[in-house]
Image (cartoon, rainbow, N blue to C red; front, side, top):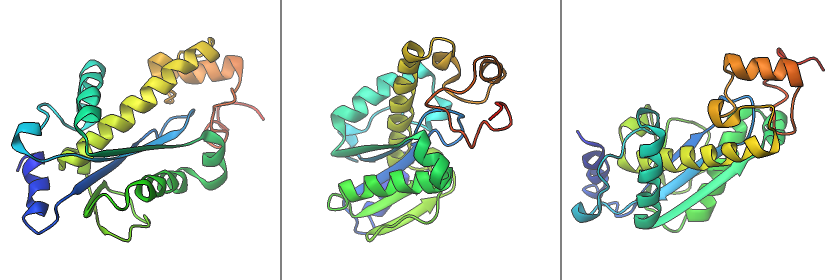
Length: 202
């Protein structure tokens, strides 16, 4: 079953507007977690070819698809929760918080919400959390691309603020290079203190 066919199956169940939601940035040592919710048209002539799980796409392809998604989407919402909040409430609750903000922003616009698998989301509408949803649902895949590109663009800007860190390269993830930078230069304002306590002395 294709990603589009999967979403259209909900149309056949009587739900007209299907939304997809996903996040980017749960694992990095720095920066925010980003959540995106999109409602994409499922008309055959408006389907965007090449949409897939953002992790399976090149950065160039994600950027191209992002522009098309933003042009064609019926509704989008992108919400960020910063590193300080992540340190306070933990990454899972921060992700839920970002997702709830997206839902509140779009609650009147969708009939059914599909989400890459995460529990504890406050959704009064019809809702389904799907394991590997970004490789299953067209709307979730579109949301994964929007979230990933939004976060990557933001993280590239960090290079200008923190020239000692190669954020454009490692995107804040815990690569060998990033850990070496942390040990040499210490934490920045955007690092998640609860994530780096094993690498940086207090």
